[in-house]
Amino acid sequence: MNLDSISTALQSLSLYKKFKFSSIARRITQGSLWSLFGSAVSRIIILISMILVARILGKTSFGEFGIIQASLGVFGLMAGTNLGSTATRFVAQYATRDPDQAGQVIALIVSVSYSLIFFSAVALILTSGLIARIMLDAPHLQHALIFGSLLMVTIALRGIQNGVLAGLEKFDQIAKLNILDSVLAFVLILLLSNFMGVEGAVIGLALAASLAWFAGGIFLKNELKFTGITVRYKGCWSNRRILINYSFPNFLASLVATFVLWYCMTLLAHTPDGYAELGLYNAAYQWHGPMLILSAVLMSVSIPALVQEWEAGNRNNFRKIVFWIAGIVLLISIPPVIIITFLSSWIMSLYGPSFQDGWFILVLLSAAVPFHALSKIATGALLGMNLAWWIFALNLTWGATLMILSLWLIPNQGVEGLAIAFLTAYSVLGVLSFSVVLYRSKKLN
Image 1 (cartoon, one colour):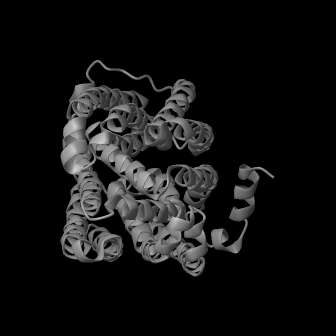
Image 2 (tube, rainbow, N blue to C red):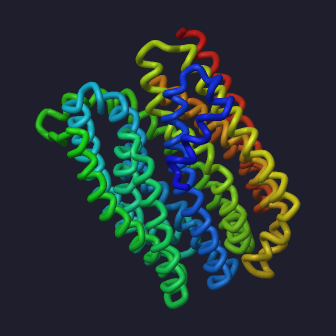
């Protein structure tokens, strides 16, 4: 039975029969199943590869690998990775009713992102020595940062590509690309990290992402041709208000989240045995992401439907979709947290005997999942409402909470302090962001 037939079967259940906007349910279900399948398979493959890489590198080097990835995340934002969500939002709005406008939006995003990618890569290479020496307190990581510029570039390019495909609701193709990326990464990371250590692991990720991006380019070209969308660069700058009113606040929101977490990780790196403790954090964090798969998938696939309901003025349907998705996410995200809590010691031991003491870190990061998941759904709703500045304000609150608690707790409690700050910050963000969605959607009704 393929995913499309599973989707059809699910829609015959009483839950969907009672769901008054069944066409929306069908679109979200089909997109969710494909995205969930692709994300789950790719996450599992990456999780297994990270366990094996941790055993190859050891706790300290695995901590170095984790902070290199976090550092690349900061520069990746400068390279325009958040423009993918802009593509999703506005391609979804114009793809069917105004293909010419959709083509101009894509042209605008591509032209801006390519410029940002070039300057960010140059900036990373030129400042790599300074970052490694001062911020990371590890001069030997300079070469890993330089090699990481390729990874940053390919992740940014894939983000734009997936954003356009999501706006076209081609979630099956995104799923296939994610699986391809993870399979290639599994082989290349293990092979290269065994010979080149941290640098090899970074190069392996970069090569895998590059090959997946090339394959995705073929997919996207065919989809644009099929939907009648032509990417036109002439006159695309007339849509620049999209960048000012939507992309810029979304960029600031992502920058706050990524930079603050990275900075808190550097605080931990400067403590005694800091990179060994970062190794524990990196191992535990590998499980936080997979538990967010459903919320990330539902946020992604629901944005086109939310945008169209909001733009059509169907506020009641909009709120029902948000409530329905949030309920599913909370219902499904809590049981894995409980299971992982009971198995935390065994799970951490998979990374190697020296990782087993980090079981409590895994418990704390797992406990943050329901709140993080709720905040993702709220973010999708706010994007659908075109209230990107609210996302920035909420992320500022999250960042302030995380940073204040980290500055207070890390010097004395080390990695446990970072994990406690992480849990508290996401608890605040989850409750506050969903409350804002309910208030704003009711106010604008």
